[in-house]
Length: 598
Ligand code: COA
Image (cartoon, rainbow, N blue to C red; front, side, top):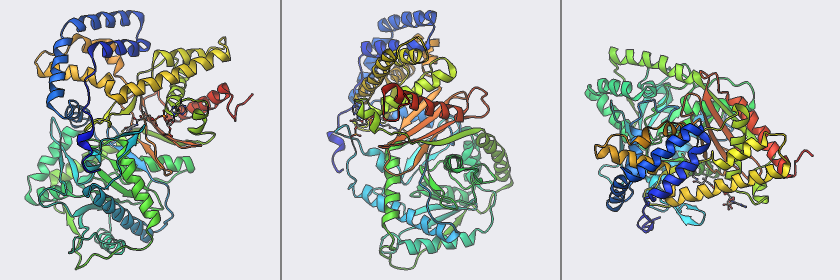
């Protein structure tokens, strides 16, 4: 991957005309006629002023930075929001169930996972990862080098993000291990700078387990708090010199390894996967594993009992696909490497227990945080399910984009349940550009709305329904192409708002309109992450009355996760999941597929 970055283009700034036209079309299904007329008027006014001035500012920024958006996006989307990172921002991956059943098996698998991460790290550091491709185009690889040895640091109004790259002075040689909520620093390289082999790692993990026989109150639970509370607690912690160095040790470490205790007992196989993904997302509450975490760390590999394992991702520096890549590497490495590897030389450094002296103030904060964490955890309604009647091969066989197909089916499921459309977010990659992250693919469109209404109307013929469905899928794919080529509208609209704030102009009228707030109220927040293994990814809903939907299409099946909040009487993850299953069946029947019920 060496040297490819500079050959990638820079993210363009779309034209005012194009963004405003697309905005009007995309916002239309969400507004009443009166609301739409008002938005139309504001769009016309914005075109006169302050649009042109703001556009010039963005173009100036684009000319003078590698990526006009990425720093802004990092701050607005990740570092600024004051909600907890757990559930509201961090993502989770549940690995396929492993076949270990006892503590020894758990530690042996944990040792392999660490060895796999170090193997991947060597490829990142040596810049030997194969360049990611999408649609025949090379993608920016910078996210890969930001996943390890980094951490988020809480601030009362704004968090910070630090990275300790291998090329920097005194690069990290250790990981953080949590067991029974106790925190350890573990050096994972030998005197010859070779990574410890899996036997050596296993011995070190065994020592850690012996040193932490019982759960204790731990600072890990503090990282589940809203950011301002955590920042205040953090200041108390680092006012003590030993604790300050311990926090720095965690922040500098390559990654976190959580050796978990029992998870909540499941009551069925889909239920087991739902609980497994929830364990990766939030730990299951203070009585289970939520305190055995450090949610500010970019990557936490979580090794639970009886084969339940996966990871948690703090989202600031990276999105789903690079995370799926490291997860896939870890699983492939664990399958392939049965031998321990090459032994690192010299005596191993004993693991060091950190944060052993916690003041009364900190212990009080921990007790408070447990209550808050349990409130949040108990509110999450997570459902994992697999649709196994067909996968992406069926849409392809009828010349439709599989992703567009799933998104339009999801629009149908939502409409069937709520009798109205909702603003829908799908992540679209901007990694064709230097330092690119994501923009929004708007899955709710005039075309998807025309289709969903027709589909639920018995008076509309099958032929018309088929035509409208295909039209909606084609429109979705077209919108996707617009987004991934740097012509999305969500980040452009955001850019104008941020440019206005920087120029001291206040919030433009267009951005304080009811249409604009409806446009950005995502009751469906969705993402497709393609994976090779049987793993499932998930995240929390972004609004209290919404859903988070993540899916990974395979050739003949699709893995889904759906999350929502139990405190909202209008949402129900199980109900959305079963409606989606029904809609996937119905659309195949409509198109006359192989399982069609005729
Ligand atoms: N007929 C037949 N085949 C078609 C087709 C059609 N009309 N349209 C697409 N296909 C094929 C594609 O060629 C592709 O083939 P491949 O499997 O051989 O590569 C396959 O179907 C899948 O294409 P499609 O379903 O249209 O979507 P995609 O794979 O291009 O993915 C996105 C779409 C939006 C998910 C992708 O562009 C993206 O941005 N991914 C990143 C998302 C992300 O960052 N998520 C994490 C956020 S935290």
